[in-house]
Length: 496
Image: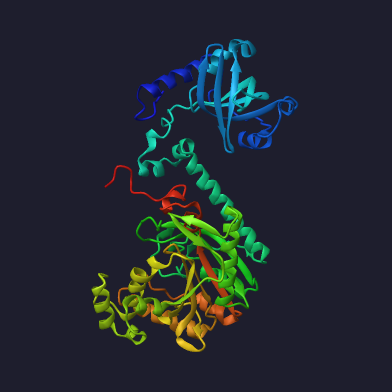
């Protein structure tokens, strides 16, 4: 029999127990086991129960992983973990007979099924008095000793299965994630949105400024791109008459990895016909306030020591006001590259002196303004050059009807009134192609089919994307996006 790698004596001893189980006629990797209850739900249901109620509850049948064993001669206590939580088990030799030795031979990490009666110990802990049990699966590798075996952060991410087993806080984060994702769906569906699915492999990557991952379809003999955003396909559906749609799914961007970025991430995008970006700002305020109220019973939450108040209305900050005020310059200086560069240098902000004016605006905003936006803040009035898919403001065509939401210095959402003029959209795409020719690999590409869809007519529409992973970071009070993604992207194991 082959052995697990880097196992050592502890693994070899478990392999010996594996053989002992087989010699006793016990399948060490068993099958179906019908249960009647789950550990965490039992704890909730019977935590306030009296002894008489526990006695009248009748037998319960559970299955899970053995997480602790404490021997006391002819009796033994154990902890059983399933997907809902833990519960204590109590076994006695005079009840289990010759099977008692088998019960006490289990290793931490083994899976068993038990049937027994509920009672409360002298210390008040809800416990299952085991009357019968079944071995379900052998664990060949010891679990990390409490938490000491997984102190290395990268090991926790790489071996998330072990992290979840020995770190209750990690489990809580991902249970919270599931709860938040469910709340997002309910909120939108109550507003009349329907959930849809659009392609993750696209012939033309679009909907965002980003570099895509490339794959190849052998049968069609063509390159495809993992989507950087579902936007252009969702708007095709609006053209088709589905006037309130949303998609909650994965996007892929071939970019760096940091505490705020993972190349594969979850995005919520939704589109509402006959609305503009102002309507979506109000909807976003209601969505976030509803989430924080449901999670914490208040309009405030704490993130990394910062108290954040989500009570609307949230401030609106004009894009250029943020830059010029931060640099101590008059409003007119926004079009003066030399003045911007000199003021930035005086404040220790490094910028590329060869950058275009538009690139300079973006870099200055990212470095100077974003980190200061702790309270929920909508940044509005972006230059049209940064918004190739957004409508122009009617009163100032140099600006776009676009907002970005920032909370705790992080971008949380991006929305705008959608450009639905196919002729202007084509000109915007052509301008983006010129930027690509100048070396901007993140500039948008031409999507002829999307233009054709717009030519059929798209109603006035507003759309928004919310970064779900960052949203979870915010409400789970986690400093890194890797803490809220089950399996974040990592360098190869052992690589530099």
